Image (cartoon, rainbow, N blue to C red):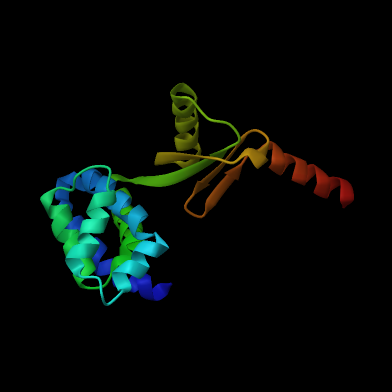
Length: 176
């Protein structure tokens, strides 16, 4: 895994410098490309000696929901031609880290047992930003086995207020 991180770093740095003020817009299309590049069948196709760079480019752009701007097309062509398609998810992750460092924010994943509406998410965001002391970019993932409550992961910090975690704590207390 360290090898892919090492490969991805110069791409992420160069892309971050090239993006300049449009880092947020770049992150959107880069995340979409990373999601597509994480498909195992696509990577097998790209690694095939019979597939040309243009064919791989055509397959990826054909799957995209939106059209890529010219800088994104150029970036994707370079990644494909250099055989670094497998590193694209790591490039996106390192790019996000650079963008967040510049903005003074962090990515946070909120695991919830139930779907959250906009108002509840906004309230939760305010509470979490005070708790963690920085601006958070929230992403909600459903996890029904939590029973209720939320589990928030910000980098290596975890805040678990789920019913499942409380039941586990009670179990440990009762069996100790």
